[in-house]
Image (cartoon, rainbow, N blue to C red; front, side):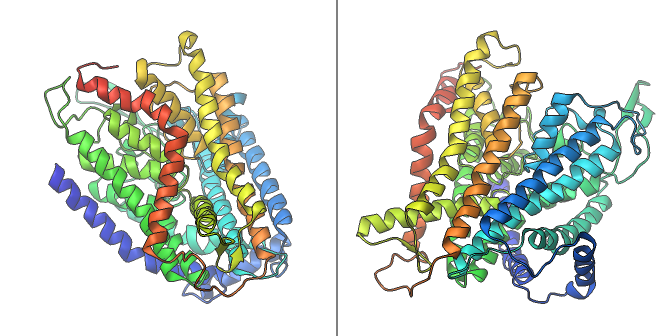
Amino acid sequence: MFYSGWIQISFLIAVLILLVPIIGTYIAKVFQGETTFLHPLLQPCEKWIYRLTGVKNEEEMTWKCYLRFLLLFNFLGIIFVFLIQKFQGILPCNPEQFSAVSTIQALNTAISFATNTDFQTYAPEISLSYGTQMLGLTTQNFLSAATGQAVLLALIRGVVRKSSQTIGNFWVDLVRTILYILLPLSLIFAVILITQGVPQTLSPYSHISTLEQAQQTLPLGPVASQVAIKQLGTNGGGFFNTNSAHPFENPTAFSNFLELLCLILLPAALTYSYGRMVRSHRHGWILLITMGCLWLAGVSLALYAESQVNPLFPATTLMEGKEVRIGVAQSVLWAVSTTASANGSVNVMLDSLSPLAGGVALFNLMLGELVFGGLGVGLCSMLMFVLLTVFLAGLMVGRTPEYFGKKIEKSEMQWVCVAILVPSLLILLGSGYSSIRISHDANMHNMGPHALTSMLFTFASTAGNNGSCFAGLQTSSVYYQLVLAAVMLLSRLSIVVPSLAIAGLLAGKKASIESEGVFSTKTMLFLILLLSVILIVGALTFLPALCLGPIVEYMLMMKGVSF
């Protein structure tokens, strides 16, 4: 398992490195106004959309105006998805005649998909109609991903522009992301998934007789189209309750590889796009290598943990909760990748991982949308740490910190602190208060340190806009649905608002010529310092919680104690 697993991982890395410059160059061309091979086909559609909606694509916005339209758009999206769920009983495309979703559930789901979290506290195949899945959830998968991409584009313009009061047009960024990037890639990916056996139909559920002559209902639906955008848009919300462990969402080893590749492809490619747009390819590669180092370290530790003999069971390969059709290595690789990328889709029961492997997944979430991360906002999170690293390096050498010739001052650092600290605060406060309720909380099905890991994972998943679930905590109660909805919303705002504010501040500054005395962000020294800052901040914030959860559970497991 160990050697074959690393062969599979090496192949994924090779394909990713090959595709990153290709996809990254295409994305950069789209947003720099350069002509691509799709422009003759799609540019008339883009202009028609502007005419239909009344958008003046040549007009640009200040960061506050950009933020105002973004928040309004997301608020309307929440209302739209909420109403679809409440009226799904009388809306078309409901062959199973599902009734309206409860108010609290509908609110949680609407916020979850609008924030690109896709945290599901329900079984979609027994709760939501085809119409709700397509018009509500799949549509939001496109829109929430495009919103995150728009925030990144605004931040890039803030870095690049000089003495400017504007950072672009939100509506143009939104339209171009969907039209030129997400739609074409999703269409290609969905067709490939259909060839692998993923359903794409509006037919009612199929009722069959098993070999034992028992009656069974097979849920169907427009699955391929939703799976394609859930992976490419780093959304993660599945058409079925078991997500990518369901054979209708992930039927073959080839589909498993493609879905795994797609959940990190665009976030990784954006580092190359960033380097091209700020005219520093080397800096873009530094960011990608930093993400890759954190991801590879997590994969290595998780695989090591899963290959060790568990004293409670005399075996080195425990298959409980793993993807039996594909193997332990692919299951672990997916678990680490999905928690690192803020995607949230799963093909393995995370609750069944060994303590250290589960701890890796938890730590990925605690770092935030940092290692690849959500589309757009993941790189924004990394850039917050880049600015923090530049600021600390400047203080160490006694010079005013600069990033691409622009001074990083008090105002920028205040927003950086908000972006880094607010999600951490939501995780620790939410987990701490909710843990007090465990003694009289029937929703917790684990005990001891494993219960704390489950609690921390739930709040880290929602605070990181990830959406994956550890399964030990039942989150369908009114308390958890309302609290987690608030966490998802506040966490999304904690990266969107600071990113746009910093974009506005940087865009308004003059850029000086970089001198020899300025700390370079294009060297291996900067890469090492950036990694150190990320790990130190993560360790200082979460090490006590990790020690009480997965680390102590591992130590007790080695002594033959389980939870």
